[in-house]
Length: 294
Length: 202
Image (tube, rainbow over all chains, first blue to last red; front, side, top):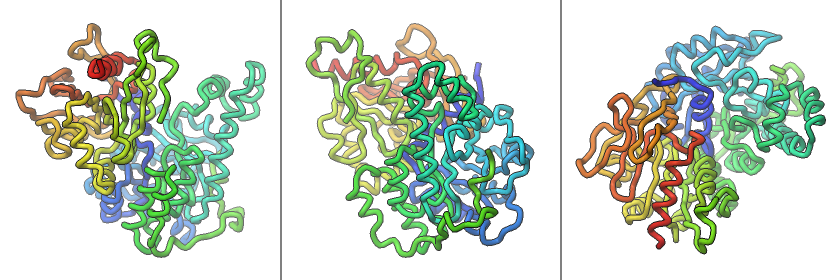
């Protein structure tokens, strides 16, 4: 009688995370701080993106022991990252019963041609995208949540802004096209015509659109929400700042009240130093995470 | 504030005052409730502040993360005013995390105790057609990391069960569901709720 892991329930969890903040954490202590600050979910990973940048080398799925420790520490959903195309890491994360898998460009890609067949899993997936075509290809592969890639670990929001603006602008553009033009648009976006038609008709993606990559302040979070993101992921921005607990709560407040400048001002006050940042446009080509995946 | 949706249908035609229903919008599945309520002829308002409770004819507590909602409400000073509204006798519809907020350990509006994530983590989320009290045909339910009511006062009526577990309750003007009627594509529960709100205006 029960029908488990249907597209409806997979997308449904993403819908329930709307209007919230998903925070990167590397241990149970950070997970608890995130939960107490009002995070709607945590992303369990071994190193936050800014440390992955600094350390270099291959970045992989986290140690299951660390993921289990975080699952035991909090009652909010726990997400974890698998490398692009590494379906066995995804199988392991499913065996660990994580609530969402992020097939993430922040980790080193494991397959240069294929993303994971996400329909094959009971656990829902979130994937990054830089434009509408990429978002729709991931959805066609079974992703139930899309996030902007941004440029993780930089503290520079410019790439996340570019990606969300691009996706939203292309969605609006589809709304004005007729049937023949939609077929051409599908070809240009390299996306299935059926999904292109759906987006044109509804004026949105068929799954929630969240934002990630470079969000470091309450105002950054409110900016992404005003640009049309439905929730925000904050990676290095919280636990690489001077006062993580306070900044985490402030980002949550600014996300809830993203349309109220007085509340965003209040949330921005007296937070101490933000994370050390890097200008995304000055990164070398081999340092750009957003170029991973296609 | 949103305006009444175009799908109000015959029920709202000729009525000077469509009911004003708030949806608690700290975070969570707010949009789907707003759309369902508007299809059923209500005018809606997203409630994030104490002032947002003023003048509402009814209130929806949506799904989402009950821990997050509880923490943010406390920080906002919204807990006491919200509890007062929920106990005021106005119609309330609560789903999933919203159901949890009603229990003894949270806002203490309904004498019951909920167990969170009672069916398990996300891989145990499911859909099922359930018999729901007062509806003549099975309702297509969507359960997402859903709670169960594990204990309740005799004054609480059970309105739905899944495999014996209590997943629907009604006590006076307050109804609560462990599943997500707003995600079902079936507006019967929302239509009935909006009618209850409308009846209080007559």
